[in-house]
Image 1 (tube, rainbow, N blue to C red):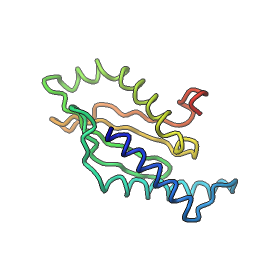
Image 2: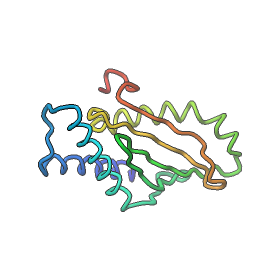
Image 3: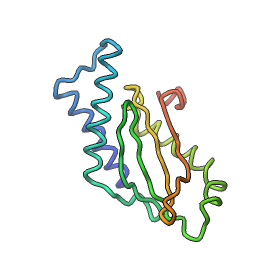
Image 4: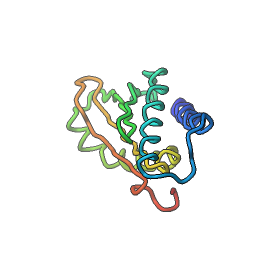
Length: 145
């Protein structure tokens, strides 16, 4: 539920950018890149205002970073008694599929605007990087595009 609210906030941020005079029609590539960078910066600043935010009983969204044409969501996972290595080995492929499918569906407006999304997961206990999933429009099935 909170994830949905967060994504709706993000979409409304993009919508307000369009309402505030940013062009959505065809434009030169350099202008589109500048606009996308502005969207990334503004979206990350806006989302960060409500963080940290609990996603589920194991996961907390700590921050959102915007750099260039990429939004990076940084999550912390409470892995309990599982070691970082066990989480990396046992959960990576399952999570990659779920995260990619979720991003392709919920962040379609960003992906359509050539804004890439990354989900970075760290351990709550050790602060070590567990995995990172980078998703662009090319990673989504054609039906999601």
